[in-house]
Length: 227
Ligand code: C5P
Picture 1 (cartoon, rainbow, N blue to C red):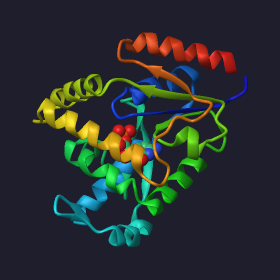
Picture 2: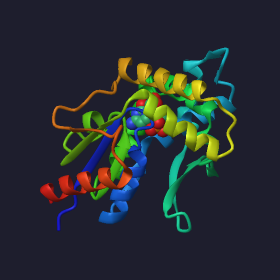
Picture 3: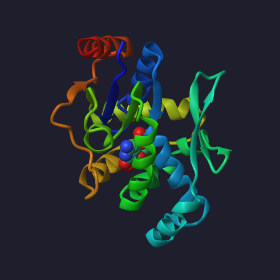
Picture 4: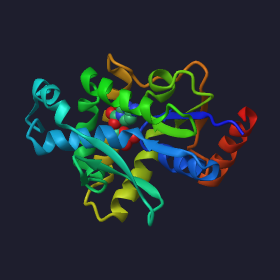
Protein backbone atom coordinates (compact mmCIF):
# COMPACT_ATOMS: atom_id res chain seq x y z
CA UNK A 1 0.00 0.00 0.00
CA UNK A 2 2.35 2.69 -1.27
CA UNK A 3 1.56 6.34 -0.68
CA UNK A 4 1.81 8.70 -3.62
CA UNK A 5 1.84 12.44 -4.26
CA UNK A 6 -1.16 13.90 -6.06
CA UNK A 7 -0.79 17.35 -7.65
CA UNK A 8 -3.93 19.23 -8.66
CA UNK A 9 -3.42 22.42 -10.63
CA UNK A 10 -5.67 24.62 -12.68
CA UNK A 11 -7.41 27.93 -13.12
CA UNK A 12 -9.17 29.69 -10.27
CA UNK A 13 -12.53 28.38 -9.10
CA UNK A 14 -12.40 25.10 -11.00
CA UNK A 15 -13.32 23.18 -7.86
CA UNK A 16 -9.74 21.99 -7.24
CA UNK A 17 -10.03 22.22 -3.48
CA UNK A 18 -13.36 20.40 -3.29
CA UNK A 19 -11.95 17.53 -5.31
CA UNK A 20 -8.61 17.51 -3.48
CA UNK A 21 -10.33 17.44 -0.08
CA UNK A 22 -12.59 14.58 -1.13
CA UNK A 23 -9.64 12.59 -2.47
CA UNK A 24 -7.53 13.14 0.63
CA UNK A 25 -10.39 12.02 2.84
CA UNK A 26 -10.99 8.89 0.77
CA UNK A 27 -7.31 7.93 0.70
CA UNK A 28 -6.43 9.01 4.25
CA UNK A 29 -3.95 11.53 2.84
CA UNK A 30 -2.99 15.03 3.95
CA UNK A 31 -4.67 17.82 2.00
CA UNK A 32 -2.87 21.12 1.41
CA UNK A 33 -4.52 24.17 -0.16
CA UNK A 34 -1.54 26.24 -1.35
CA UNK A 35 -3.82 29.07 -2.50
CA UNK A 36 -4.60 29.65 1.19
CA UNK A 37 -0.90 30.28 1.83
CA UNK A 38 -0.65 32.91 -0.95
CA UNK A 39 -3.91 34.41 0.29
CA UNK A 40 -2.55 34.64 3.85
CA UNK A 41 0.52 36.49 2.57
CA UNK A 42 -1.74 38.87 0.62
CA UNK A 43 -3.86 39.40 3.74
CA UNK A 44 -0.72 40.16 5.75
CA UNK A 45 0.38 42.69 3.10
CA UNK A 46 -3.04 44.35 3.26
CA UNK A 47 -2.93 44.59 7.06
CA UNK A 48 0.52 46.17 6.93
CA UNK A 49 -0.48 48.64 4.19
CA UNK A 50 2.08 47.04 1.91
CA UNK A 51 -0.58 46.49 -0.74
CA UNK A 52 -3.72 48.51 -1.43
CA UNK A 53 -5.63 49.80 -4.43
CA UNK A 54 -3.13 52.64 -4.63
CA UNK A 55 0.00 50.53 -4.85
CA UNK A 56 2.20 47.61 -3.89
CA UNK A 57 5.55 47.97 -2.09
CA UNK A 58 7.32 44.75 -3.13
CA UNK A 59 10.52 45.62 -1.30
CA UNK A 60 8.62 46.02 1.97
CA UNK A 61 6.92 42.66 1.46
CA UNK A 62 10.23 40.92 0.79
CA UNK A 63 11.73 42.53 3.90
CA UNK A 64 8.75 41.38 5.99
CA UNK A 65 8.80 37.76 4.78
CA UNK A 66 10.81 36.38 7.73
CA UNK A 67 8.10 37.67 10.09
CA UNK A 68 5.32 35.81 8.28
CA UNK A 69 4.56 32.46 9.86
CA UNK A 70 2.06 30.22 8.11
CA UNK A 71 0.59 27.13 9.66
CA UNK A 72 -2.23 24.72 8.85
CA UNK A 73 -4.12 23.44 11.85
CA UNK A 74 -6.62 20.63 11.52
CA UNK A 75 -10.11 21.49 12.74
CA UNK A 76 -11.70 18.27 14.00
CA UNK A 77 -15.21 19.66 13.78
CA UNK A 78 -14.95 20.94 10.22
CA UNK A 79 -12.83 18.01 9.09
CA UNK A 80 -10.21 20.11 7.32
CA UNK A 81 -7.18 22.24 8.11
CA UNK A 82 -7.50 25.97 8.64
CA UNK A 83 -4.95 28.64 7.79
CA UNK A 84 -3.13 30.41 10.61
CA UNK A 85 -1.11 33.56 10.03
CA UNK A 86 1.21 34.37 12.94
CA UNK A 87 -0.98 32.25 15.25
CA UNK A 88 -4.23 33.91 14.18
CA UNK A 89 -6.92 31.89 12.42
CA UNK A 90 -7.43 33.77 9.14
CA UNK A 91 -9.53 31.17 7.33
CA UNK A 92 -12.48 33.57 6.87
CA UNK A 93 -10.44 36.73 6.21
CA UNK A 94 -8.45 35.20 3.33
CA UNK A 95 -11.54 34.22 1.30
CA UNK A 96 -12.86 37.74 0.62
CA UNK A 97 -13.02 39.33 -2.82
CA UNK A 98 -10.58 41.99 -1.57
CA UNK A 99 -7.89 39.40 -0.85
CA UNK A 100 -8.71 37.77 -4.20
CA UNK A 101 -8.06 41.07 -5.93
CA UNK A 102 -4.50 41.35 -4.53
CA UNK A 103 -3.33 37.77 -4.18
CA UNK A 104 -2.05 37.24 -7.73
CA UNK A 105 0.18 40.31 -7.49
CA UNK A 106 1.71 38.99 -4.29
CA UNK A 107 2.12 35.54 -5.88
CA UNK A 108 4.22 37.03 -8.69
CA UNK A 109 7.05 37.82 -6.27
CA UNK A 110 9.79 35.17 -6.53
CA UNK A 111 10.87 35.55 -2.91
CA UNK A 112 7.30 34.85 -1.76
CA UNK A 113 7.11 31.78 -3.99
CA UNK A 114 10.49 30.44 -2.81
CA UNK A 115 9.42 30.64 0.83
CA UNK A 116 6.05 28.96 0.27
CA UNK A 117 7.38 26.28 -2.10
CA UNK A 118 9.99 25.25 0.46
CA UNK A 119 7.30 24.86 3.11
CA UNK A 120 5.08 22.91 0.68
CA UNK A 121 7.89 20.50 -0.23
CA UNK A 122 8.56 19.92 3.46
CA UNK A 123 4.87 19.07 4.04
CA UNK A 124 4.95 16.54 1.21
CA UNK A 125 8.27 14.87 1.85
CA UNK A 126 6.66 11.66 3.14
CA UNK A 127 4.12 11.48 0.27
CA UNK A 128 0.50 10.59 1.07
CA UNK A 129 -0.51 14.11 0.12
CA UNK A 130 -2.98 15.85 -2.16
CA UNK A 131 -1.90 19.41 -2.89
CA UNK A 132 -3.75 21.92 -5.01
CA UNK A 133 -2.51 25.14 -6.56
CA UNK A 134 -1.01 26.50 -9.79
CA UNK A 135 2.55 25.14 -9.86
CA UNK A 136 2.31 21.89 -7.90
CA UNK A 137 2.93 19.49 -10.80
CA UNK A 138 5.47 21.76 -12.48
CA UNK A 139 7.53 23.23 -9.62
CA UNK A 140 6.63 21.94 -6.16
CA UNK A 141 6.38 18.21 -6.96
CA UNK A 142 7.60 17.63 -10.54
CA UNK A 143 7.87 13.91 -9.65
CA UNK A 144 4.29 13.55 -8.42
CA UNK A 145 2.87 10.17 -9.44
CA UNK A 146 -0.46 11.71 -10.44
CA UNK A 147 -0.99 15.20 -11.88
CA UNK A 148 -4.40 16.60 -12.66
CA UNK A 149 -5.02 19.88 -14.48
CA UNK A 150 -8.53 21.26 -14.06
CA UNK A 151 -10.23 23.66 -16.41
CA UNK A 152 -13.72 25.06 -17.00
CA UNK A 153 -15.02 28.07 -18.87
CA UNK A 154 -14.48 31.44 -17.13
CA UNK A 155 -18.25 32.00 -16.99
CA UNK A 156 -18.85 28.62 -15.31
CA UNK A 157 -16.14 29.34 -12.79
CA UNK A 158 -17.31 32.86 -12.02
CA UNK A 159 -20.85 31.57 -11.54
CA UNK A 160 -19.61 28.99 -9.01
CA UNK A 161 -17.47 31.49 -7.11
CA UNK A 162 -20.31 34.04 -7.15
CA UNK A 163 -22.75 31.53 -5.63
CA UNK A 164 -20.18 30.67 -2.97
CA UNK A 165 -19.55 34.31 -2.00
CA UNK A 166 -23.27 35.09 -2.00
CA UNK A 167 -23.94 32.19 0.32
CA UNK A 168 -21.37 33.67 2.72
CA UNK A 169 -23.23 36.98 2.62
CA UNK A 170 -20.49 38.77 0.65
CA UNK A 171 -22.03 41.65 -1.28
CA UNK A 172 -20.43 41.31 -4.68
CA UNK A 173 -21.83 41.38 -8.18
CA UNK A 174 -21.43 38.59 -10.70
CA UNK A 175 -19.54 41.00 -13.00
CA UNK A 176 -17.05 41.80 -10.24
CA UNK A 177 -16.42 38.10 -9.61
CA UNK A 178 -16.02 37.36 -13.34
CA UNK A 179 -13.57 40.25 -13.69
CA UNK A 180 -11.55 38.97 -10.74
CA UNK A 181 -11.43 35.40 -12.08
CA UNK A 182 -10.28 36.65 -15.51
CA UNK A 183 -7.68 39.01 -14.01
CA UNK A 184 -6.18 36.33 -11.81
CA UNK A 185 -6.06 33.84 -14.68
CA UNK A 186 -4.23 36.41 -16.79
CA UNK A 187 -1.63 37.23 -14.13
CA UNK A 188 -1.21 33.57 -13.11
CA UNK A 189 -0.57 32.40 -16.69
CA UNK A 190 1.67 35.32 -17.66
CA UNK A 191 4.01 35.74 -14.69
CA UNK A 192 7.73 35.08 -15.14
CA UNK A 193 8.18 32.80 -12.13
CA UNK A 194 6.25 29.50 -12.14
CA UNK A 195 3.40 30.51 -14.45
CA UNK A 196 0.28 28.37 -14.53
CA UNK A 197 0.93 25.86 -17.30
CA UNK A 198 -0.06 22.25 -17.86
CA UNK A 199 2.71 19.88 -16.85
CA UNK A 200 3.68 17.56 -19.71
CA UNK A 201 2.49 14.51 -17.82
CA UNK A 202 -0.70 16.04 -16.37
CA UNK A 203 -4.17 14.76 -17.20
CA UNK A 204 -6.53 17.56 -18.14
CA UNK A 205 -10.12 17.50 -16.91
CA UNK A 206 -12.61 20.08 -18.17
CA UNK A 207 -15.40 20.05 -15.62
CA UNK A 208 -17.72 22.67 -17.17
CA UNK A 209 -20.32 19.92 -17.56
CA UNK A 210 -19.27 17.52 -14.83
CA UNK A 211 -20.84 17.17 -11.40
CA UNK A 212 -18.73 16.77 -8.26
CA UNK A 213 -19.42 13.03 -8.01
CA UNK A 214 -18.53 12.39 -11.66
CA UNK A 215 -15.24 14.23 -11.29
CA UNK A 216 -14.42 12.42 -8.11
CA UNK A 217 -15.02 9.04 -9.75
CA UNK A 218 -12.86 9.91 -12.75
CA UNK A 219 -9.95 10.97 -10.56
CA UNK A 220 -10.31 8.08 -8.14
CA UNK A 221 -10.08 5.69 -11.11
CA UNK A 222 -6.88 7.48 -12.16
CA UNK A 223 -5.49 7.06 -8.65
CA UNK A 224 -6.20 3.34 -8.75
CA UNK A 225 -4.35 3.03 -12.05
CA UNK A 226 -1.26 4.31 -10.23
CA UNK A 227 -1.54 2.47 -6.90
O1 C5P B 1 -6.34 28.55 -5.27
P1 C5P B 1 -6.74 29.98 -5.01
O2 C5P B 1 -7.70 30.52 -6.02
O3 C5P B 1 -7.19 30.21 -3.60
O4 C5P B 1 -5.37 30.80 -5.19
C1 C5P B 1 -5.30 32.18 -5.03
C2 C5P B 1 -4.16 32.76 -5.84
O5 C5P B 1 -2.91 32.35 -5.28
C3 C5P B 1 -4.08 32.33 -7.30
O6 C5P B 1 -4.89 33.12 -8.15
C4 C5P B 1 -2.59 32.51 -7.60
O7 C5P B 1 -2.31 33.86 -7.93
C5 C5P B 1 -1.92 32.18 -6.29
N1 C5P B 1 -1.38 30.82 -6.23
C6 C5P B 1 -0.16 30.58 -6.82
N2 C5P B 1 0.41 29.34 -6.71
C7 C5P B 1 -0.21 28.35 -6.06
C8 C5P B 1 -1.48 28.57 -5.47
C9 C5P B 1 -2.05 29.81 -5.59
O8 C5P B 1 0.41 31.46 -7.44
N3 C5P B 1 0.39 27.16 -5.96
